[in-house]
Length: 121
Length: 377
Image (cartoon, each protein chain N blue to C red):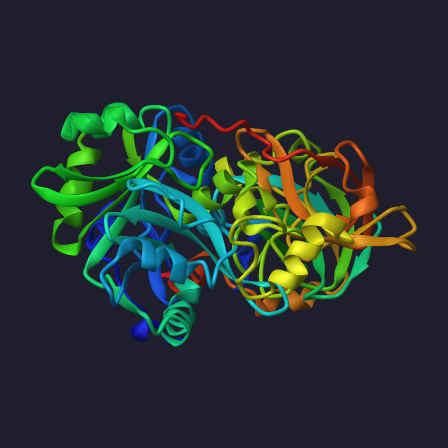
């Protein structure tokens, strides 16, 4: 299991060719308490940069983008009742989608935890 | 506008010390929210008392060159559809600057204070409004009160909190305006606001603003509230945001603001018309309009945002209008929105469909406000 981060403040926890995707603690703090999360349906094939979810705070909607090419496999079922879970535990219980990687080699372009910490510093 | 040309209000340092998330807004750096976040701040205002820095708004003193207060009131009536002449001393009223098409150049509060009128105008419209007043009211002096800050103290505990520093405010009623000494600062206080709650707006010298704000914040009921919660509070209260819900293309009648046009200015009134766009607006008051501003309550949890199209049907073949503001309403505990729809579909409970990310979201027209006002009348 390896953890990757993107410049769009997402994290990916990768096991084999699947990844769990969420937003970082830093992003969650910036967004404020979330009131609604909507994800693309399972089976949706996307390219890096396509929207895979929308998270909404009181004030604004923000897209979550696919960090790499792949397919949405599943979403966090608990977020429909409790979207604030993303705010309270963004890097754990508040994960957003499960994702199949089409080109795992694309991960090489992403950041590790240290690089991300430097990126937001 | 680049970051270094943004203006600071006299409370900038207080916002920074208080953990304000500072964002550019109408040429100023303003707090969007503090550490508690928009939801908690919103709820605090509805249950206790919130202190807002609204010093970015424009404050203008208007006087007739003759020095006569009634002459100033008559003059201002050339630019707004409200009855300013019969506004009593120490009272305030909501109105709009209109254009020749009947559209809204800005909305504002007007108070009669002796021989002067005090105007509070939107930050983003400040320069245009001041030029408009100077161009159109050559018989008046337009004094921009650059050295005054504006605080809003709002919520069910606002009266108790302010009365600790200025007991006289207990006697004020909704839309009363008085000059009051608060901790040695010469304040002009109105019992009004932009949240739907009881509360006050406190105009005071910039040099006193931080001290008075800190005095108010010493009380446990009072917390600083940012612009984010200010927006969700006013939306639940059914109040318009200039530039979103009203602008140069919407008339006061389309915007359901006809309550702010008194009989004296309507057809058959003692001072009928006489403001820009009066022909359009007075005709609309009698003959109706083709679209109206309404509240919209969507089904489900997804907030509708400004710009979302509204239709009669889920196939998006019969357009009705569009959403102009939308947010999650922390007190309603559901998404709330407002927008314009065809008049035939503007009655409360009319089902409509909004388009959100290509999907059809059912909504119903909802009477405004979403949260009942608690003014002290």
